[in-house]
Image (cartoon, rainbow, N blue to C red; front, side, top):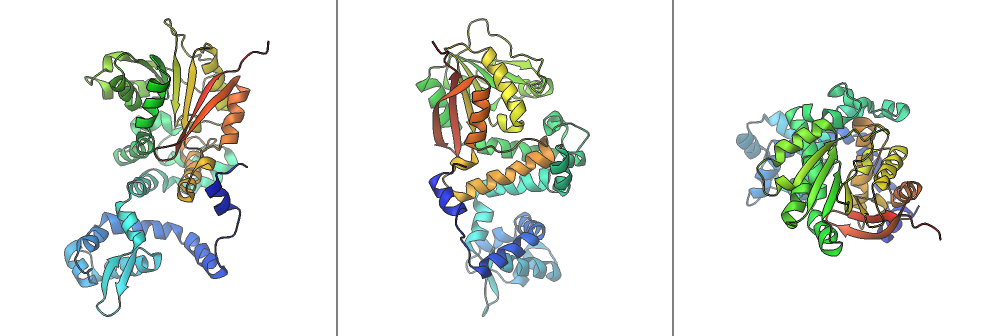
Amino acid sequence: MNLSAALEKKLTEEQLSAREAQHMAEFIAWGPVVFQVSRLMVKFGILDLIRDSKDGMTREELCQQTGLSDYAMKCLTEASLCIGTLLVDVNTNRFTLSKTGWFLLNDPATRVNIDFNHDVNYEGMFHLEEALKNGCPEGLKHFGNWTTIYEGLSSLPEEAQKSWFAFDHFYSDTSFPEALRIVFDTHHVRTLYDVGGNTGKWALQCVGYDNDVKVTILDLPQQIALMEQNIAGKPGAERISGYGINLLNKQMAFPPLKDGLDAIWMSQFLDCFSMDEMTDILKRAKDVMTDHTRLFIMETLWDRQRFHTAAFCLTMTSLYFTAMANGNSKMYNTEDLEHCITTAGLEIEHIYDHLGQGHSILLCRKQKKNT
């Protein structure tokens, strides 16, 4: 396993004392309760009230402001003290935010992750054991009878759909400015396939960045319909088209492009498939590529992260794929992705690291023929 320098230091040596390790073990055992208490401290506005107060707040003041009973506030604040999101002055009984509480309340990534885990994952994760054994997203039946979550995105409950797209877009959006410069300024792309283009957010960024580019989004037919609604009337939408395709169907080829294809874009897409499925998709991409065409794969590869927190979030996200999304994919490391790329008849020309929230772009081309 090849790890970034920061991860190698963190993951190959013991970091905790015995007492700290025991505490962490109990923290894990009570993890579901820790999560729900912390989520409700945010939802009920308790952390907001404490943050915005001059000298902290007493339990009685919090009850008056929130309408919660003294019993409920006792349970929440006492648990939060031991979780580590609150501090208390024992002389005045006034609560203030800890550093952890501040990040829980103010860090955008944390807020997105809380909503995603509560609205999308929480109840379905009860079936993780079955999903790992069966290779199917057994937790998805909480929402509907679909093979993968992608088939049901347009039918998810409103809060779950909102949290799913917020999670998906948050991690990709921060990388878009740098990615646009790489694709259009460095590589001068004019025709592009956006594979798994979702709501068309990247495509709109492309046509807004370059007035000459034309984008074709390849995605499930129902997703193409959502995309067309989303881009309607927006600047550059006339240069975006959609092509409905089930990429899990090996008989469905990528459409040839009459005027030549400069680039294929796959952002946070391949992690939605098993390694065998990924390899097959990459082979079909290669079939429409010329020696001129470049494939841009943007992924958050967990082994290339600069910070342990990022790697933690990514490896946890893998279990969302197991229990909820499709049962057989994950957040891959570089070695896994490179294996699929090479097996598909492609090769990595360059890797751009540390874009946005920890993305990498793998720039690929067709393997050169031996002469």
